[in-house]
Amino acid sequence: MTVSEEMAGRTFVLVHGSWHGGWCWSRLAPLLEAAGHRVLAPSLTGHGDRKHLLSPAVGLNTHVEDVVNLIEYEDLRDIVLVGHSYGGMVISGAADRVSARVSLLVYLDAHVPKDGDSMCSLIGRDVEARLKARVDTEGFGWILPPSPASTFGTFVEEEAEWIDSMATPMSWRCYAEPVSISGALNAIERKAYIRCSLHKRSYFDAAADRHRGALGWRVRDLPAAHNVMITHPGLLADALVELADREAAQP
Image 1 (spheres, rainbow, N blue to C red):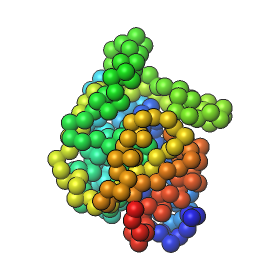
Image 2 (image 1 turned 90 degrees about the horizontal axis):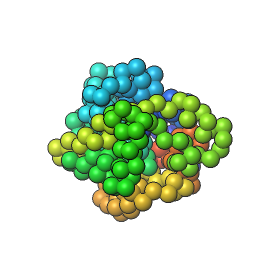
Image 3 (image 1 turned 120 degrees about the vertical axis):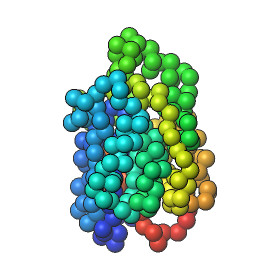
Image 4 (image 1 turned 135 degrees about the vertical axis):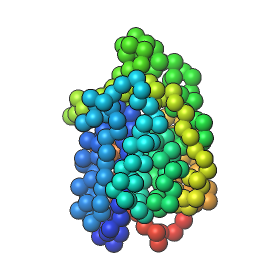
């Protein structure tokens, strides 16, 4: 399928993951906009062009509030809410609060939490311990430095260098703070998971497999690495438009 104007008029809200900012969608957004869609890609507090706001007080709840406020103050409705990686935590908490405004949730190689889950609880003790060691030795006990793009399968030198040059640190509180989900999230009938199959992470495999064939879910596998919006924006744009099509058959 190619991006076409058959689905023109949808509003996509794109929520980035760890160490990224709104900049990471700069190759994807024009493709969606060229097809007639509206795209909003905010930088979460402390990230990207808002890196000057980073502090120990910034956490997952701050980022949930960022997205909720964007949706409410822009008076967005019938939106496609997309979360990449850590952004899956953010969109889950936000969609639970504004479920009536969301028509489709898309988890892009992302964590799909339950109430009370945190990034730390989902990534596993070994990964948590490695990251916390960096926080303690390099980040003054609260700053989580960026991991190299190559860690996530971005091996084209120019792409990896660009990602690494743009990445910014984040607060460890984003990983330690649990998400609050009341159950309103269940009112959103349409959800999707996009698994980037060239990115080898067992927790993302488990998240995708858990929802294959589940009621209201559609799962798509893309032959790309984790930062697909940068490395394969056309492939991702096609997948998002196809998933957003209300007339498409399940799953």
